[in-house]
Image 1 (tube, rainbow, N blue to C red):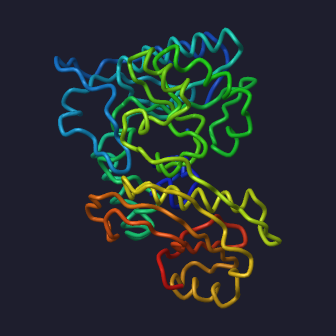
Image 2 (spheres, rainbow, N blue to C red):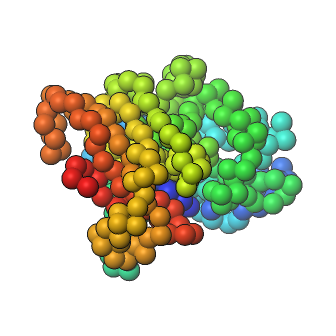
Length: 355
């Protein structure tokens, strides 16, 4: 996802990031002002054929070919004057959710929703021209594979004490407010889309602001009560639980190692039906000056100051498609090398056997 997301490989690849460019953006908590802003909407078009509200669009599932022809959207103006386009029924449900939250003193607005495939392609082309194809591939979702194309994915932001809280790093500081919001989602046909710990399934890091409309309250409640991702509910991911071992490190904190693992899991999401078994930190003894020099040799622009190795176990499906693995096979101690600068986030430099 493009916009305010902070993860480098995931998200957009990936965040993770979501979050990204990033992965992924402002007003008053006054009821009158907020209502006036958000209810000023116009219907784009009337379509006779309905979209499939349960359609899965992610890093490996493209937007259906006829989606944009069938989509009926509205435009709204948020509290900072930004235009946001949303699928019509999703917007109606959002207004009901918003009104219910305001009864509890929680104020939100829409940061972003629909982004067309053409707009995504323009963003990709722009980033490729400015920063190169490799950087663009890491930070901008592939056109046609962003859930925001559907118009059913909504990114929220908070309004606290009359001030807009829009940056990811700021919004994440209010878990108690997001908990109140999440508790109401299913009642209006929404689910929280990117769950913490499910990066290898969704391809994105945890995003408490990113919700998805399903147009079915019962289904939304079932998914929420089971604590599963949309992919798992639809049977698009059938893998089992994943073991994560951060080991013991005198160099990195567990949170720092967790950030690295999120990058790996987001990248893994591109591998489709491969069943992830475990990821473990290889140990401080692997973080040598020699390997740091190797990472800077692989990516001369990295200017890395720290390096870490992780080992992964996984099982491939019988049909592997374009993947270069053996079918129906177990892989163990598959190497992932990540590096970072003194003030930067982890980047996946290389992966595979032989390092």
